[in-house]
Length: 335
Ligand code: ATP
Ligand code: FE
Image 1 (cartoon, helix red, strand yellow):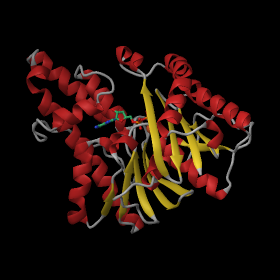
Image 2 (cartoon, helix red, strand yellow; image 1 turned 180 degrees about the vertical axis):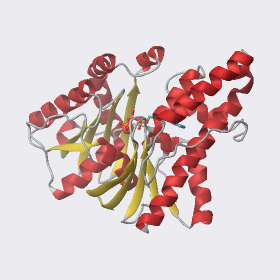
Image 3 (cartoon, rainbow, N blue to C red; image 1 turned 120 degrees about the horizontal axis):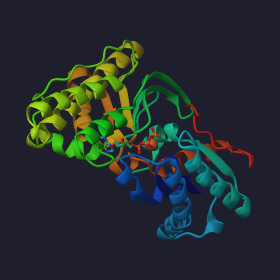
Image 4 (spheres, rainbow, N blue to C red; image 1 turned 90 degrees about the vertical axis):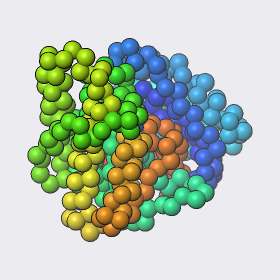
């Protein structure tokens, strides 16, 4: 079974070819244009997808060393994401599937961040059902109870900002580039996580909130800069370490609660923020401390990619779960 998968939900144009669950190619064209704006500009993203999609798909096929005529199905991201971006991938996938007369398979991007754990890899353990998935990305922060591939239930999510936004927006006010997550991660390793104390939001149950933390950091930095204009420069690594430490604390607290409430002790993480080395370490440390088992995706399957879309395409193909030609992109698609 050969699946060609296309991902275009935000600002990365990606294509991947999968053979029986194994990745043959995984191409991502990241859009540099947004850096100068400090965030994704939807109109520009859509235009860049239009420019990138043909070369990216060509490259994915070439790298996989297969011909279009060998494909069994085309999988694409239907949502959630930016409408203008989703439309490019959706229209492209539809036309290609129609032209080749093969099945079209729609994929939910957030399910894909979770099911990326089922890509066939050597020496990689897959989570057993049921497990808890914590999806932490640029647009989402969710804890999902995963009963089987396509039976998932969101049991907790953010009421405001996503955890990726907490990283990116705090980084922005520190003068770091976009996206700031990777840079904060890098600097956090060089700083003292307890240099500055930030309070965790007081939201009950499995709900998350990150907008208050962002404001807290803003006021803290403003106050310090007033007293010492070089405050950020002199303490950047410590500030990054302290912010990351606070965010990790919030995530771990909620995971502890989720394992207690559900009795499920297998935890898989996914989404761009799951690339964070501090979070990965904290989860690992939790194995002996809290008795859970954690599953961390390979680095290239954390931020947006089409390999994760391909595995969902593969699993749906096995079930004969295809989309109709009139399927529409859906920017707020739910799990
Ligand atoms: P969604 O999946 O919710 O639609 P998205 O697709 O825009 O959102 P992803 O590509 O999954 O998001 O993740 C991007 C986010 O991951 C950005 O906010 C980025 O800062 C963050 N990120 C990437 N690497 C790291 C890291 N090492 N540490 C912290 N955050 C990171
Ligand atoms: Fe994503």
